[in-house]
Image (cartoon, rainbow, N blue to C red; front, side):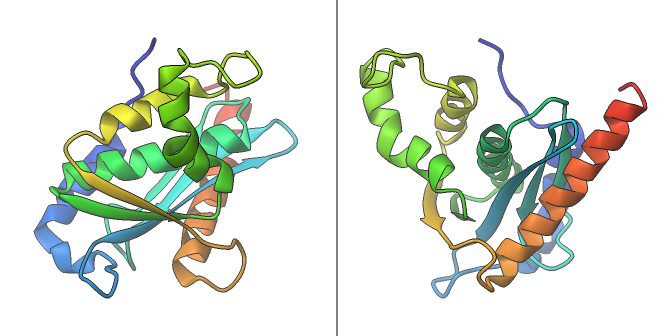
Length: 181
């Protein structure tokens, strides 16, 4: 199974963010909180990842994915990239807010069962997107991650920012595809 690691530019932004820890958005308890979102668009199923750590934070992520993509894969990769970036920035705790019930349930509710079922669903099928889910599980070692669901397009500023970053990345994914890379 291939190891999923974010592109070097994602990790570089997180390393640079270490010098300005005040730029991270925090909850009322002082824990860094980010918003993660994925986007997948027609006509080519171009997809992208968006993670918002705070206004003008150099760790913010807008990363195009290869064509063809899926929305669920983009949502899962947004969680994964957020964890990698947080660890690279030296964080010990992270709250990830996402509007994807699918992604959150995969890594909170379903993951323990799938691990004990040899990555098979209750219906006996292989778990979809298990490469991404396993990567999130592995990346979560050494950092305390809490996941919170937020309703999409319901006025959550950070979620809107992550959505915009993901859409921008999906548009870049299409341009990359049209240019042949």
